[in-house]
Length: 96
Image 1: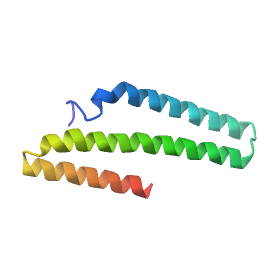
Image 2: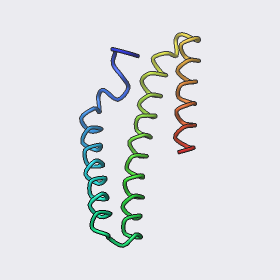
Image 3: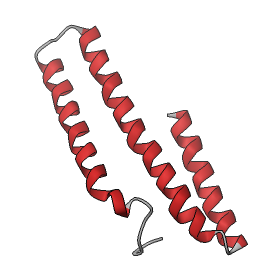
């Protein structure tokens, strides 16, 4: 869907806000390492940032299914393509 509306377009600002918060978390982790904070405390923050990114990813998958896949439902070839894309994306997420 290059150049067109994407499934997340309606929630774009919310995604950007979440990503900015995650960016702040990452900067905080960097500071913690720089300041030699106890490793378990750093790992706790890494886990929190990872969970936050996973939340963004799951939201994007849901948006893709509800928008892009649903839009392709009337065209069997397009539907197969969109479902294959979603399946591969989910596989990448599960493996990460």
